[in-house]
Every structure is written in structure tokens, then in C-alpha cells.
Image (cartoon, rainbow, N blue to C red; front, top):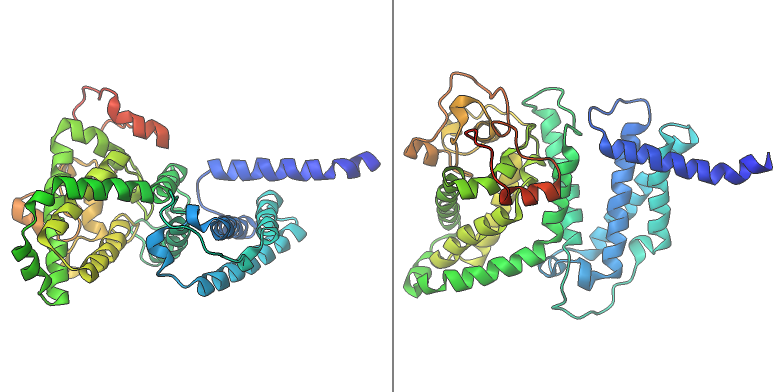
Length: 393
């Protein structure tokens, strides 16, 4: 009896590790009634809260300088407190009822660890700016906000009814999402350096003064058009230049489309595309409020266009890029190859003759023809430096 009691913590720890590891490697629909769905939600909140308390302890290294001056710390503390209450109560209730005990114990452990580290009450003192940093706060805020907004949209207006939230290879795209957000500081540093050194000679102050004097709304529309026009040709080059395709193929390797699928990108493509687009906007001379609004537009549309969402847009579908339009770009159907390049304005593709004109309403399959891109973040970063198969892609 004494031995069994002594070994109980080890048994629970083994159960937690085994069940959580299995969940992180599995995919498919979460069946209600077993405590797994609520446990996964509780674990996700607990992880975000734990990361949040680390950001409170080390803001100079784990938070994005541009965000520090904009968000309300009091509100964030309140959100974290509510999240800890929800995660802790749900996981504790499931453990008490012996439902999916492993995952829920993991969530409860993280909640207790977060509280032990100070929870939402960690004081933030003065700290020096200019230190190298990871965008942990950006990761937390964007993952929480995007998952809530786009999962709700996908369930309310699904293109493919019954597609699981944790669909095939979701882990691969989550790693891309995490790394891309954490390294935002490094990427912005590289992008800003290249923009000023590559495009600086093209700046004409008289042009910038003229553009900056335009009223906000038409200036924003012009900025979106300029960015999309440049991105159209950059995107087309990724498809038509074999060397560039090797990088872009990583993005096209997703065989299931949803809100997080757009995160699957090679780091070279992220940096190169941002340099070209933001460089063009810098040269033209759009105002900071317009550029800030553009960042919001492109951030939303980049996620939304990959989402498992279908809405009847009517005649607007030939004006603006929608999930229906962009899904065709990711299709491996014959009529979709090298089509629908635009990111914002669909009429650009119609103007240059690269829009998909199919009798089918939706694509039948997605991914790279030949399915030769490996799964795994590191393997996908290394893939472009290996030889492509001879089959036409």
C-alpha cells in the first residue's frame, strides 16, 4: 500500500507526459464528452499564460518594442487573470471527474506554475531599450486573437464542412507560426536594412510629398494597390523562376487549407517578399497612419484568404481576393497551376490573364504536384537547397 502511494506521483507524471505527447502528435476532430476538447482548450490557455508571465519577467528580451508602447498592460493583466481562472477551473473539474486526466493535469500544472511565478501581478520595472529580443508578446496576442476569430469564422461559414481544427500536419504549421513570430525582431532588422540600402536611391521627395498629401482613404487604397501590384509580379516570379520556386514550394506544400496554413513559409521568402513590397511603399512615400492601416489589412487578409471559409461574395469576387479565389491558387488541379497570384485585388489577375476560370466551384485537391516537399520545419527550411525532382511542378 505504501509503495503504491509513493509511486502515485510518478504514475500521474507518466500519464501526463504520455497523453500530452500523444495529443501533440495526433490530428482529427475532438470528440465532446471525454474532457479532451475542454482539456485542450485549457492547456492552450495555460501555455499562453505561462509564456505571458515569462514576458512580464523579461520584457526587454521577450517583448516587441513597437507593441510595448501601444497595448494596455492593465488590460493584458486582466485577460491573463481570466484565462488562468478558466484554464484552472476547467482542468481541475476534468481531473476531478477523471476525464482525459493527462492533458488536464498538464494544464493544471502550467496554471500553478504561472501563479507561482507571479501570475498576472508580476511587477514590470524600468529596463533598457535596444536589447536583442524575441517577439513572445506578439506570438501570444496574435495566436490568441487569430485562433478565436478565424476558428469561429471557419465553423460559422465552412468551405469544407466537418474539417477538423486539428487537421493533418497542423503541428508543422504551428511551428512555422511560432518561429515567424518569435523572430520578428531579427526579420524587421534585416528588412529595414535592405530597404534603405537597396531602395534609398529611388526616393524622390517631390513624389513622396504629393502622395502624403492625399486624403487617408484613397491613399490607403493606393497603398494596397501598389503593394499588390508589386506582390503580383514577385509572386509570379516565385512560380516561374525555378530557383525561387524551390523556396515558394514550401508554402504550397499544405494539402489542407485553414487559417494557419498561410504560416507555412520559408524564411527567405518572408524576408525577400517584405523587402520588395515595403520597399515599394517606402519609395512612393505613404504616411505612417496609412502604412499602419495597410499592415492591419495585409495581416488580416493573409490569414483570412487561407481560411476554411466560404461566403458568397457575388460580383465582388472579381474585385477583391477572397478565400475562394486564393484557395484556387493553392490547388494542384490542372486548371489552377500558376494562377490567381494577387493578394488583395483579384482584378489584377483578370487584367493579366492569370485568373482561374473553371466550371468547378471549388478545387478538388491542394498541395504541390508530385508531393515532394518534406514535412517538418527544419526539413522545409533546408529543402530549397536540395535538387528538385525532374517531374514538372
